[in-house]
Amino acid sequence: MSELVGEAKAELKQASKEVKESENVAEKYSAMTVSKNSEMNMGDLTTVLSAVPTHKPVKKQIQFVEDKQEFSRFPTKTGRRSLSRSISQSSTDSYSSAASGTDSSDDETSPRDKTQVNVKGSSDFCVKNIKQAEFGRREIEIAEQDMSALISLRKRAQSEKPLAGAKIVGCTHITAQTAVLIETLVALGAQCRWTACNIYSTQNEVAAALAESGVAVFAWKGESEDDFWWCIDHCVNTEGWQPNMILDDGGDLTHWMYKKYPNVFKKIRGIVEESVTGVHRLYQLSKAGKLCVPAMNVNDSVTKQKFDNLYCCRESILDGLKRTTDVMFGGKQVVVCGYGEVGKGCCAALKALGAIVYITEIDPICALQACMDGFRVVKLCEIIRHVDVIITCTGNKNVVTRDQLDRMKNGSIVCNMGHSNTEIDVASLRTPELTWERVRSQVDHVIWPDGKRVILLAEGRLLNLSCSTVPTFVLSITATTQTFYSASGKCSHPFSLIPKYFFFPLINLHTIPHSDKVFCKINSEILHVHKYSHPLLL
Image 1 (cartoon, rainbow, N blue to C red):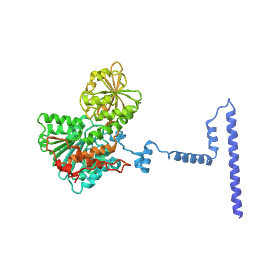
Image 2 (cartoon, one colour):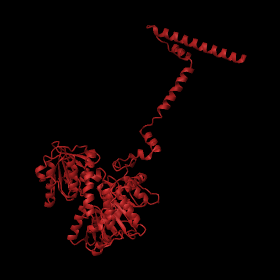
Image 3 (cartoon, rainbow, N blue to C red):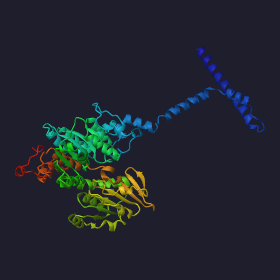
Image 4 (cartoon, one colour):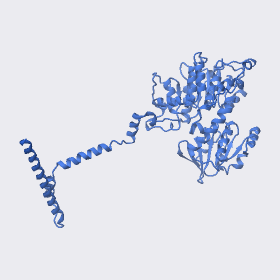
């Protein structure tokens, strides 16, 4: 007990001594600073500082270190990304179609210069980044939820493998919805190699997911023109594999094979063409007597015209314009070139938001329909100086010429909803006197010498798939139609169009939510009268 008392007294004595020393130091420092005429001696300053007890500054230093450690718990931008990935991959790295164009600096290298391998050890593909496959798979799974008809068709026929022996080379938009189509074709027994029909519409993460599953995919968002044709060539020209069927969207793949690989083209058993542009090009080959391959016209099928062309464009035109320009449509003067099914969908959406819509149309039937729907049919040259937005929906070429672009007012928006990138004469805008200014992704200001600016979207390519997304349910109808055509094996005419009767069972597979009624029932006698049967409907 006496020892403890002694230790306590010693500690108290030491503390009193330290307090006294501190008071002496304070008095000495005060005396040095009060005197204005006296100069501080460095030796005295050293003596003063050395006399200060060291245990208190050490304590403050420790506290400072703790504060610094606490501050470091808030990570930098890079640290936040790493931390958030460890917490939730899906919440941070959303490689959605809207954001798939924004890639990290690590992916600056062209995919053509990369060596990538999937889980199966294959390198027979070329995508932006194979590591995005997990996110692409999630996109595909989301699309499958709204493509129940195509999934139902897959489950119904995959055991019989109606496409066994088919070697399909495809050139379409590579999106989550297209991926469901491709995987359905594979499940039905086909071997597939795929490339993109549009340099801006590819979802990189979906392409990676397809490559990871074993499909030979050659596509990435933002390809150059040289990359575009390189991908098509590598999709077609591979050792030990020769295609016997083409699934095309726009006709680029078909014409590439026809011109560069004529011997391979002659062995093709069938072409399935989806777009109006591709159909026009096939008709040109047919009229010239050069179409030696049976072809099927998906674009003019009732399921494509009445659903995809109309409802898909009605919902996606506004999405594409809003994402790229943030424009308000109320009171804007908009001219829509073409009043086919695509034009009808675009006009309905624009009119609903209060836009003043004009129509240009060369087909008298469609022109009369536009009048009866309450739109004013005009000539483009008469209205070009006054409109705020021009939208082409024809699938033709040179719909908007350089002369008309020269006469447009400052700030006008020009875009294309048809497949072909030649509807707007973009090539004529690439001249020395005009300046191109990239404003944001897929948005360019074309500046005239007098300072006038015209806003060009997606460089004249398909707006909705290049700059936004499209409704999955409607694309399910088109994808099911393409599968239907691919498995039909019936093509008595060089350019065939399957009658609408045979799409009734296909439409029955697509049920609208909250509707438990069957839309129609096909009579087997109709199929017998027309002497037609389909392996997917039996």
